[in-house]
Length: 107
Image (cartoon, rainbow, N blue to C red; front, side, top):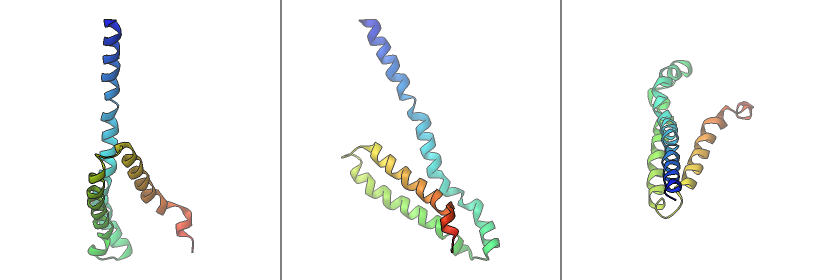
């Protein structure tokens, strides 16, 4: 009986470690908006855009992060956080990969 309890505790403690790499992946995805400073100078020189115009995607992304943190923060305690994570990662995936699709470049 005690052997079974120890095995269950060990399995539960090992299952908790899966959240560490998942949390790192989530934070890396959230941190991609800060990589915009790497792309800003080439965009300014390539498209002859102003610094304000080239920073607009960065400002928009940060504004949406703040807005959606306020919205989801109110509902997070009342519902399943997993659904917010799936929804947010789906929107993030769409926002990153949809502009790369060939149909967006067709005239």
